[in-house]
Image 1 (cartoon, each protein chain N blue to C red):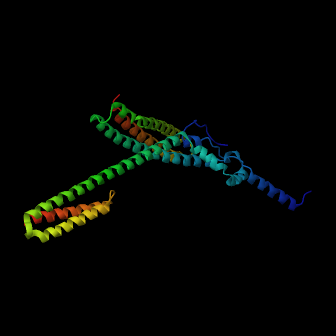
Image 2: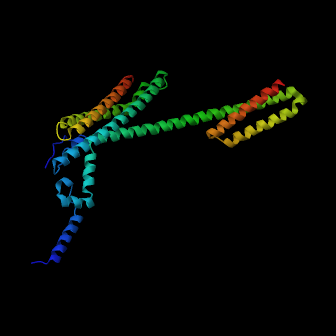
Length: 164
Length: 147
């Protein structure tokens, strides 16, 4: 007859062995087997197998397509934004050239009388040209707006100068 | 042991019906949980299908305009729609799965936990109708593509 201590040790050893072996999914086990599986991950694999159904494959395929479409859409938007920014920069460059010609013409027309104002306008034009150069080829939206604001202000100054 | 016979290659709900449970209560609860998850998944599938169809239609509008302006050839136009036709086929298969799940849930709703399963059957059927609408709209848009 074995002692109570030996029996307890044997039971503990059997529990340890259950913990090492994978007893498979819950439906194939009893209560104790189910407890052991908490450590084996058998249920997780069974759940993953159930998750991997035809319906879930179709959902994943559609989700992948939606993500690819969204990425393509973002790319197209980015290209449109770049093209729009370039067009605005080109317009500012054209403004600067046009404003310099206008200033030279007006200065010649006004002569000495308008010299001081022409000098102020030249500094304003130079400020705009420097700001444009600092903005480079990929300016931020704020930089573009600032350049356009400066250009409009210079146009208004030139208009007033031409009227006086 | 309590359980049912599954349809191979079907959705989560039908696959879960294969599982065995110690008591009727456990089986009923597991079935309700599975029906809810399946209905959630199908609703998400329908939402994604609508998004994909909407994006495809927008792309088709752009392609159609470019084709009419002779910026692309009919062959180039058609080549751009290959993935869209595959999308429509994927959606049709998703609709079939939604139909199977809805029908199975409706059939199961006579048993234990029937009310809860019936609610999910209604949601699954709605998801199927939404997917069908997405397919119909996409196919209508694809029918404009020159042959």
